[in-house]
Length: 140
Image 1: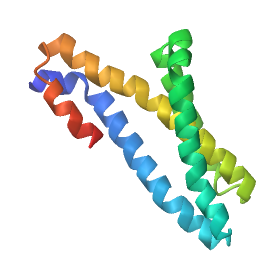
Image 2: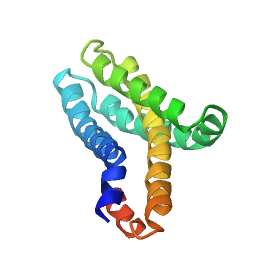
Image 3: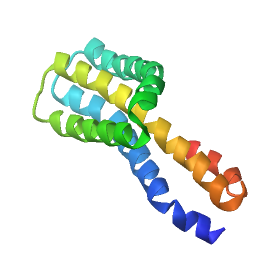
Image 4: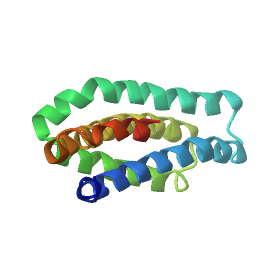
């Protein structure tokens, strides 16, 4: 069991950091929007935009990964997520934040796809499936 965990440690660490960062953004962006005196409806649409983008990412993720490959797509969407996170404090505008939340949701939905594929396939190859019973803990 230990060699399996060590062999996919980087993938598990990436998934954990991605989920922690998403949780922080989901909590702190509405707080910052309220501090910047965005309206209540604008703050609500930030959450709606995120989930609309997540739905869009679920729709376009499979064809994109099929054309470009898991590694290229994961690299591109993680770079987009990092850039978007850095742009929030630089551009204080409701419209920009809404577009950024849509892109964040899209990028996160697409980023989860290769990570989950790697987490589900690598242990099967290495351990014959003994590690797969622990994978739902990551999704919880």
